[in-house]
Length: 394
Image 1 (cartoon, rainbow, N blue to C red):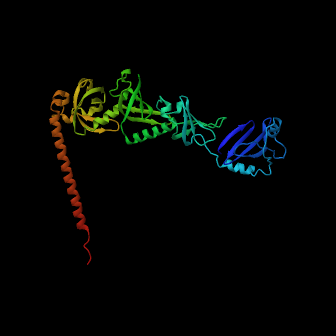
Image 2 (tube, rainbow, N blue to C red):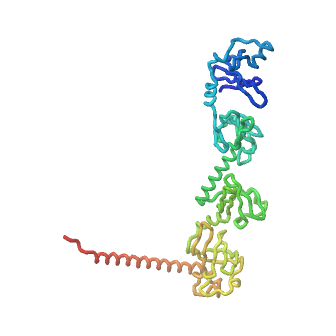
Image 3 (spheres, rainbow, N blue to C red):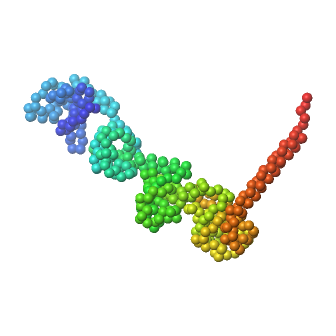
């Protein structure tokens, strides 16, 4: 279809070099087709007749007001049937449903929204609030004329046949796909603090809004001065259905610090908490647990009198969990004599590196000895197997 023009109750549809008029006679709430005629490409006056052969209302109006006509046209010599017309129109029908992704071209844009050609019978409407997940200060620059891109249909046709579109929802889905991939890779991300409250801080991450709880804020101060600061974080929880993104700056810091540490290393930290079952030590933002069973070879009866919050201590790393940002610590292995941590902790901390070196050497010797024993056992098994195998028959 090249063009459509409304003449009172008449639709004029140009198809290639011919133009056809389909007229409806409206009676109450119903309508019936009363005529089909052919006109020249120049649009000169024509005569229109009904399917019954009588003059149509349009032809009567032409006679009443003296509009000249050229060629007399009847339903018999039109050369184009209703079936032909329906077949021609069906070639240009589109099936577009809510939720479909479509490709379109923006041909007009304003601060209220944009008109988009998606091949439907009417231009689709992209409202300003659906431009993007990010603020758009200048829509005419962001969506320049003739910009072609992908959209998602967000509403059904209205009374004018117009569909609603969105770019923001497409970007939103792509953002979720991205953060799910980053979580699967356990990769740290850069976030920007946009607001703070007593529970933590709100951040933006990959075009989405996220939340960092106060317990995972790390070195982020919970006050307005942090707004606009960019920090690294790792994902704690993702829930696309609830649009929930929870992150941890503390865990990202721990992951970075843990790269520099390993089991057997002696580290210095600050006591951050004392519990009946052990002591929590902060090691450059990484939380480590010194369990009560790993404090000394002797029994520790009063852990509160032995350690207090804020005390600097030295510990050996027994193991670490990079996913949770935690370490298992020990001071028992740093004792030169059993019970030194209970009697004189300062002396243990002073000789920690020396005792740790001897402890590592001892572990290495034990490892080598175990490897040699295992090798001897394997050799003995191979030898016994050779003795029990029958000789080859000649």
